Image 1 (cartoon, rainbow, N blue to C red):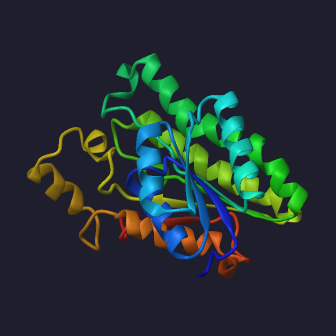
Image 2 (cartoon, one colour):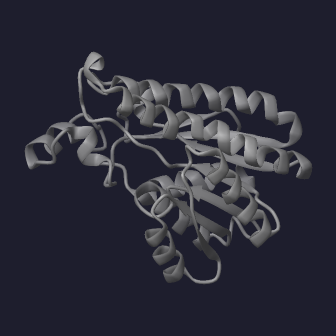
Length: 248
């Protein structure tokens, strides 16, 4: 029960890495808002997980929607101790000069602007309580970028830098900010990262991961639980690679 008494928001929490984080947090005693653009999926996941979970539809790229999410969480829980910025999108593998402006804007808004919007909505609440933990789900793409995912890579590099500067600024207010950098895993984005999902493409991708497998939602949940728990009270500004050695 490492998160007993804690209340958390996990964006993109209805599937993939986000759901792995939700389940770990619930198992460790937290109450969790499953915030997702897919309202039906969020409601279904929350219903399966009992009274400690609640669902909230959110568009993390929209200020009014993010504000409504924050207000709903505070009203329901009374406090928000943990914010996990997990929601993310990518563009398909494409030469950098051929990515459409619409695709660029979507990556920018969901992966980058969302971190600003959630901070604006929830950091004042955390400051008022002189405590809080923010976790940004970045990517190995922000550390070791691959060709044809240029603007996605850049968005995750931005997120890592944002994590570090948020950590420095917010530490005196008792708020810690960290990131995790997963390698590709069994999530809805996997096919988009690889371009196509075939045994051959999977084998080639896995060959670049020394541990020899994809990341799992459970891997992300375990790392997130540590970084958001009081066990990590001296850890801030870290971008932890949870990648099986991919970035070595």
